[in-house]
Amino acid sequence: MAASNPCAPAWRWARTFSPDELQYRLSALSQCSSSGPASDDEAARDPSWHHYYSEAVIGREPPGPPEAGGAFEQARKLVAGYEFSDPSIVRGYFDPLLELRGRPMLLELKVMGLHFLCGVVVRETRQEATKDRTLFGYRYDTLEGHLESGAEWFLLTKDHGSGDVRFRIQAAWREGTLPNWWTRIGFHAFARPYQRAWHRLAYQRLRTAIRAQNLPPLPRSRAIMHQWQPTIGPPRDVATQAPGVVVERES
Image 1 (cartoon, one colour):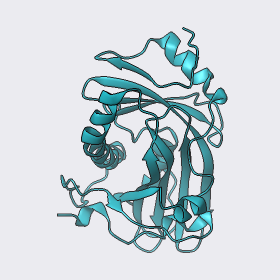
Image 2 (image 1 turned 30 degrees about the vertical axis):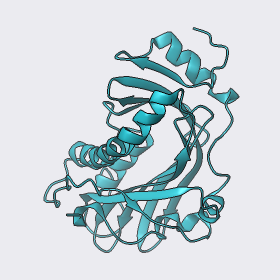
Image 3 (image 1 turned 90 degrees about the vertical axis):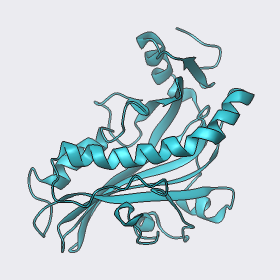
Image 4 (image 1 turned 60 degrees about the vertical axis):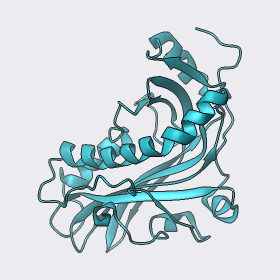
């Protein structure tokens, strides 16, 4: 299926997209310009960007670096494969044979019977190990035609002292491209509740997949996402700038 502008928003009511359209849209993402911030520092300096994050312990291992086949290694594969995303809210389409950095992804967003196709690209990856922690993660940026504009980090860490394995979702965003007046109304009414549900389900899916046990229950609180103002600094600090509030402590 061809379209005059493959970067323009695509949506359906009560049905998904055909395989041909998904393939066409995915292959055309290279034509779409980025709508995310130029850098984390740029998003921190510009007050037009909104910032939020959530975080939870999704598994535990014995103290020390990640164990072979342990919770961190299992979660790392799931995070790299976008398996933490609940497909009833956001389904990701991409070529798993491509390198993670630079990988284009097509996201199908599902809200109240509406299906939207939005493009993103993985701009940055992180792999770090110190005596205190091991970290893996990546940031994808929105592309032209996305309902939101911004960048989102997905960060997995293991604390070598406690053995806790944490997952963090952290974003800078502002309103993107909405096709018409009624989608603008719907976005403002339903986007945040769906995002909060997506965050909570991401942690639950990871816990279930790695068979994590004896962890505090995740809250059903609508405050699962926390707003914060980042400080300006090098990208390596992105996982430590926000307040130390984790979702388990919400009431």
